[in-house]
Image 1 (cartoon, rainbow, N blue to C red):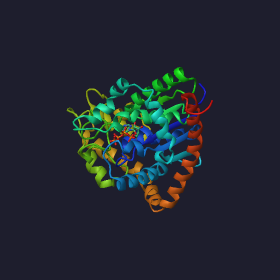
Image 2 (image 1 turned 30 degrees about the vertical axis):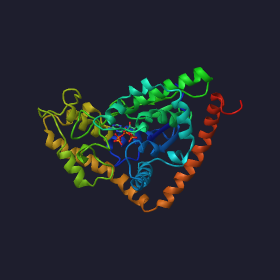
Image 3 (image 1 turned 60 degrees about the vertical axis):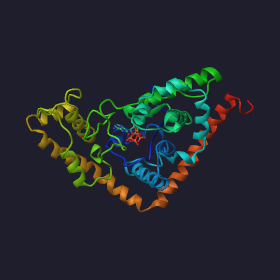
Image 4 (image 1 turned 180 degrees about the vertical axis):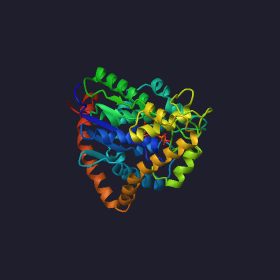
Amino acid sequence: MPLPKRSFSGIQPTGNLHLGNYLGAIKQWVKLQDTVDGIYCIVDLHACTATHDPVVLRRSVSAVAAFYLAAGLDPAKSTIFVQSAVGAHSELAWILGCVARFGELARMTQFKEKGEGRESVSVGLFTYPVLMAADILLYDANVVPVGEDQKQHVELCRDVAERFNATFGDTFILPEPLILGTGGRIMGLDQPTKKMSKSAGSPNNYIALEDDPDTITRKIKTAVTDTGGQICYAPEEKPGISNLLTIYSLLTGETMSDLEARYTGKGYGFFKRELTEVVVENLRPLQTRYRALKKDPAAVGEILRQGAERAAGIAGKTLSRARKRFGMEPV
Ligand code: AQP
């Protein structure tokens, strides 16, 4: 199979980045960056689909950028930028919004989950997948490395692109989601049947990339486990311990069967103490680099500026192609 040429992905600056974002998304991007042209975005327009404070949003954008770099994204190999700095995202989203269908957006499970229990939701939350489709299609991305939760949105992106191509002529490349087998979905520590999430009600749901060793220790100690003390990977019957095993395996590269064999008869308490050490030691170098980057906002700002310049060059060409096909520029 030929190597994929370009990947696109992004994270919303909506709160504390957590282990799910790292293992499900950023770690994969770093792995890919020697073989594909990676375009990685801080999707601040998506973050506005929920009620937000503009000052906090700006701060979160800087924090996410610093985490991308601290986790190993190299601006010499990957393009890193802020979504709102490239106007083509909003313009293409409008065009695609006229091609997408209300019914297909209404079927998106993330919209249903995030809208659940709220008195009212923004139109932006409903059309979120259309903006995401624009993000991906602008860069002719072949692959979209995301967590499991985003698979449905990538599929919608393909459907909308296919419809556009069929109606107006070949314009967009159809992307494929790239999802880790085990670990595409890291679950909440306090509720292992739901995904770990920045906007979860309790901070005990997630291990934030910024958490200090004491906080990590406390969160893992109180993580929900299942009845029976056996340490085995069985996501249906034992979602709590299976989730902790997944985190351990993804951070160390050890297989589930090796871990199961090592921890046979050892008990949850023992396993949790060892997992705590693994998490703390894996996050330590990332956190050290993150703190150094936070002290140099000008350097991070310059990386984002250069990234936006390159991104705008690529996106502008695709947008112009789409505008022509759509009847907005002379062919
Ligand atoms: N629990 C998770 N396990 C694996 N991957 C995950 N991702 C998010 N949570 C998990 C992946 O991280 C990338 C960026 O996600 P996002 O922050 O833009 O949006 P999200 O999926 O909605 O993440 P959160 O944490 O739940 O954010 P909030 O609470 O703000 O909505 C994506 O690739 C996602 O799959």
